[in-house]
Image 1 (cartoon, rainbow, N blue to C red):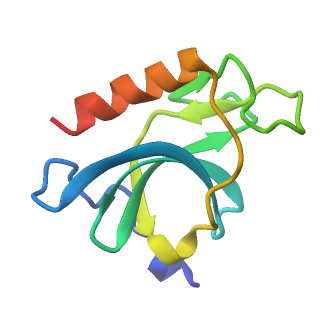
Image 2: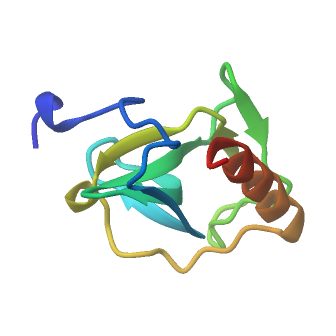
Length: 112
């Protein structure tokens, strides 16, 4: 994949084809970072990137979803879109109930 394959913030979640999915975590093979999948739009997943560094627009998660890591994890609250082929299979990671509710609220606002 090349940089031209990346589509960031081009999908309007209010479009007729956008729909919410069950929240789950996959690895973005382009950025090599885990992402929280919140929806899909045709051939693209709508997602929130995750990081281990506090940067702008991040919220610290109560518990790192990666069971093998103890360092803090953050979610970037800025929805993005990318082709489904750019993601791995779902990871066996889980969000804490508080974090899941926060992401669910964010998705609910975006998919009105």
